[in-house]
Image (cartoon, rainbow, N blue to C red; front, side, top):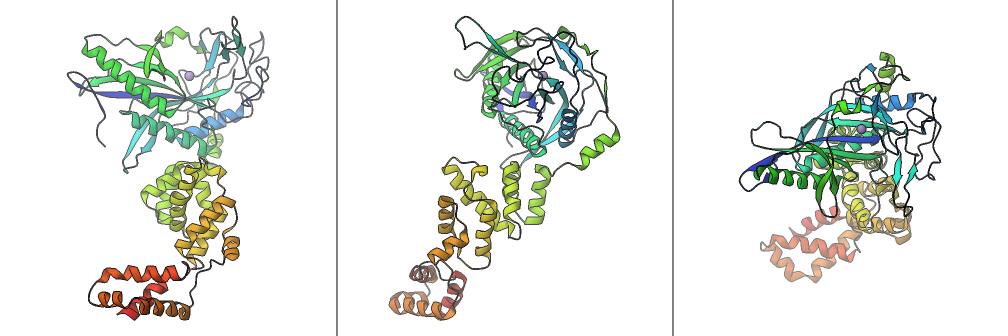
Length: 484
Ligand code: MN
């Protein structure tokens, strides 16, 4: 892949990006309380005394969330730390009633790992994972509900988040986008985060710096709280351009936290960057250090599902799919689930063709996701079965497919009702061929005198006369015999 550069007035700059992804843990209850995590509840409906930080309340760790974090760490091919510590990160916000966030600082539950990102042209890159730690989410301040008051909703307060920190290995907006998508995909396969960015289950902070070729790392700025892949990519470019301009004007980059304005397509300062010591981290005295046993970890390891990279390899090796089709199908859990059901007892390559061309095309046209596909995976499998065993031709199958998509009916019903079965009766086919030859003597003569290209014309005529139902393989064979 070509190197991505920001062109300044005088020099070209490369960008260096590190990402922090906050992923909400799939869990019914919060990290340290039994309150529900349900999205879309009424304000302050899911708030226990612990979440509201009433004096004397004690946090109790949710074992399920610990399992989810370990599972995620294993999926990121990362080191699981058997010993980790929960720290208090002290800062004030109206929607943070404790006055601190329980997070992990010196000893996170998951250490270094790596993730492979893939591009449509077949290239790959490894992006390092620095760590994954568990922490609480904060509540939400609402400033648009009343002309002179702000409201606070603590439903999110205490919800478990996994903060996944990448190494600064990302050097283009495309890589950043691919990285987020890959992380989201892995977490969804693991069922540890639903990856829903609109609902805020996955949010990104982006650290951006620029440098001339060969120079040491520049000063970075952090752009906070981006909730779409597109915004992350746009924010990286606009922030990098701003930094290049500053540098070329002889100014220094000041380390700070910035916000991305998606209307103006620019970043603007939010606050000067705080350092770790500003937060006065210290181990939460209400929580013991977390110690995991080998059994606990190996039990989770043995329950891991196949992940996208493994599925991709399987699709190529066991099903004979192309690299590209394999990566398309393995990218999303819904798609690979669909494929594996549809392909039971069928030819995987034909299923893949119908899935990635016809079905994806029709879904896109109708803005449907594969979950809402009118054609269920078993139904697509049945259609493919009818193509494989010669019941219908590929041509007729397209019509059947269209009808299935329209009505949700089974292929067998449509074929039966409309009499679409392929005709493989050689007598019928010979009759049709003789007809076409008799009616087109001039073309037959041209063909025999060397105009080979006319063969397709004869095939087309026979298929047309049969209403598309003649077995095309037989038509080809018998025609060749008759004409030569
Ligand atoms: Mn965080």
